[in-house]
Length: 156
Image 1 (cartoon, helix red, strand yellow):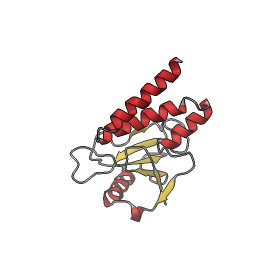
Image 2 (spheres, rainbow, N blue to C red):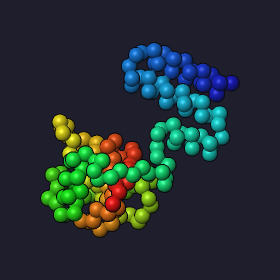
Image 3 (tube, one colour):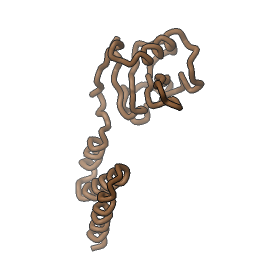
């Protein structure tokens, strides 16, 4: 009985927030509604559906992008990686842990992240290149324009 009451409370709250007309409130309402509906699904199924609903990449399903298809600033970042710097940001070259598992699995310390400048951005922006292997090596690299939410493998 308490579970049903809680479910209907979440649905009612979602309906109220969904009518606010603001994108953030609608997203929160959709997430709450998704959580409530998943409670009735078996645990393993809920996890895979949550992953698919969030837009997370599945392992091994990385898209590929050529260097020519990347923004010009990414080509400059790749050049700096091969040259060993100097990099425009002190955070460039730091360890990337791949904790979300979106990139192929390798031992800790394999991946390093580098900023791709974003024209007009007041900060580092969301664009990065992550390369694996020894520093100054740009052969196992991935591009993200959404701050590590998804990646594209940079073709050779």
